[in-house]
Length: 393
Image 1 (cartoon, rainbow, N blue to C red):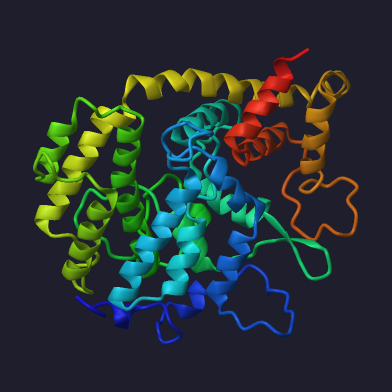
Image 2 (cartoon, helix red, strand yellow):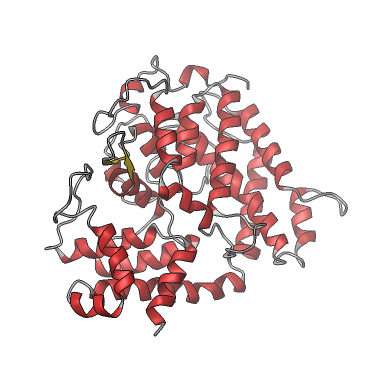
């Protein structure tokens, strides 16, 4: 119901407030800033290169030249819109939901979840840990993404705990029809796997639910656009309880689910859909897996993505023991890689670097981790261009 969670909003009156707004370091001040804590996080994210690269990263369908196919950027904007509508209606802090939503997928690799799985295979083999985009998102905003301050120094983003918690807590399927934030203030690096903990704030929970609402309908719309669902539309209409001439429209799915969630959620039951809508979500998700995510055309692209990512990784990996030879073979590629590395390891750096040093390249695994960070930040097109340079003569 309207304002049913207003008493739980993340405001200075909330007992969690001081924990939620904590930062690792004090923010530099311009002396004329009118933004709130979460507005500053929001603008730091949208001004970053990592955010802008989302427009060239795969959501589900790899199609860098088709403007009608949803990219990671469009998905992020959909999640922000949906979460803002829900948070505003329920009386929560919309500034916090906006900051979480706009940053929630910042850790995604090129080529969507397929690229994520490939990087995870490499990471488990060479480093001994899995790669997952929620954890990578936390590490990106903590360690990798840099912004220039008003004195031309490069600094870490230094986001609030509440936004970082929303990033690492946003994923995982909602298999039970109730989502309530956890009470514990934890070290976010204690996360060992996705969905291990609920978000710390109601706003983080809203973004987590909005993420599911956003992709279910949009993935169907994209699948229709590329022709995957031509033979299965009757089954889809039955699930959606539509007549033959009714539109299968993403905005209708989103609107109905938002309304249902808002009307059924409160402090006692948490964020909750009606039983009818929750059953609809489960059927829609099953349909998407059966006919979209497991489609043979999506599977076929995996081998292409694996070739690109593993070739880039293996080439850069050789740099560790064969620096002169690899640099001579791929001067442009290595020049860009070295420029990136210089920002994060204890080499000769000039005074503009005020970010934390995170790599000690006397440790081989730390160099491998650096390569994984580097690849995870690439757009689809940039990864392809690097691969083409590697195989060209």
